Length: 102
Image (cartoon, rainbow, N blue to C red; front, top):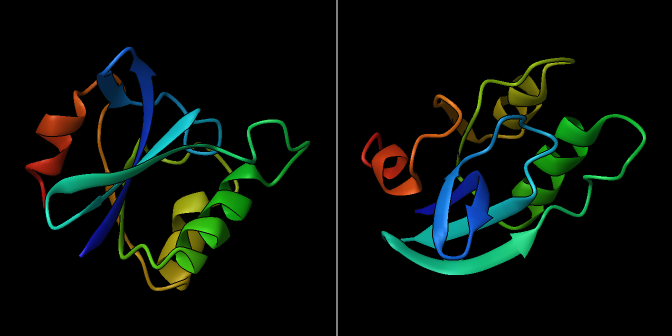
């Protein structure tokens, strides 16, 4: 299963980001192991960041998105409409803890 975690990282310590569309880093996990860490390409988009991010993750084959509750314009609904399961976690939660919710 391919899982995307929307996070903020300081050195190697990552935690759930404070905003769905503005999450600076996306950590991708497969079978419990981190396989990719990428910068959110839509952080500087003028609008629809959450929708754009959801579409990007769907194209990467992500099945589950773990992140903060989407604040506006239904970013999590976009992700769900694209076939991904969304798990909302409190901002600041360590990624390791969030992954236990799978």
